[in-house]
Image 1 (cartoon, rainbow, N blue to C red):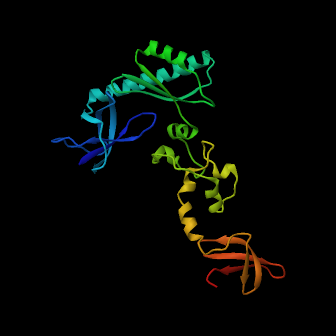
Image 2: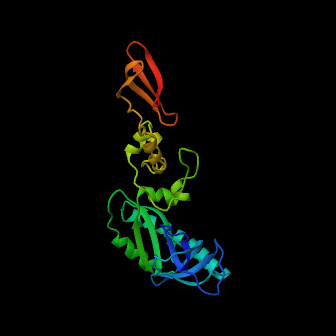
Image 3: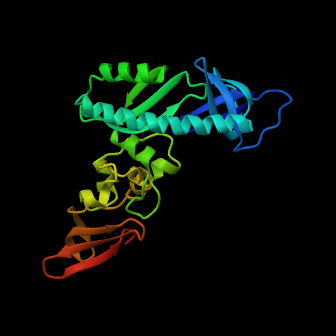
Length: 259
């Protein structure tokens, strides 16, 4: 079955979705289209055209976005920014500890989404009531985590490049401190934490490679029998396949694991 893989524009979570490729319509990657999902009209861009059989499709194609559709989308975007500002001001009036991050209308304005961060759960029922009365539409307030905030706001990582989460990552893989240890990284929070304050997502990229390369290598701190006698491993280079061992009377000597 031929499908259009799409990404919703300006939504809190730019999750991918699929639409059946309609007959007698030509598409190009990057085109904007109007689709119907959850009984609401939304605007999305085409990411790819794929042949898939095991994907359940619940979203339907409506039309290719017209000039008028894009004008409506721009108006929705402008109005949602105003709503974001109002929601932040109102939350302060109500003494709610909420920091609003982003907002968007569905294309047909049936729903207004606002995302926020907070240190704890917030009773925002009064705020939601005020927003519904002002904007005359269904309101959804969604609390997001610090990683999602970084994804939405963007920024630069310690590598000097744009954040992975805001450019190409579609989900957040589990990252642990053991991955940093596995890659011989200094456990300094300023070095291994991202702008979100959590462990760098990129620690996950090479962890499997390091695990594989470390096979057959001695552990740092272990005692090894060498041609120079019994020494204590002080350093390991998994790429050169070498290690350094310290001896009481000979200092530090480098060896190859093949010796």
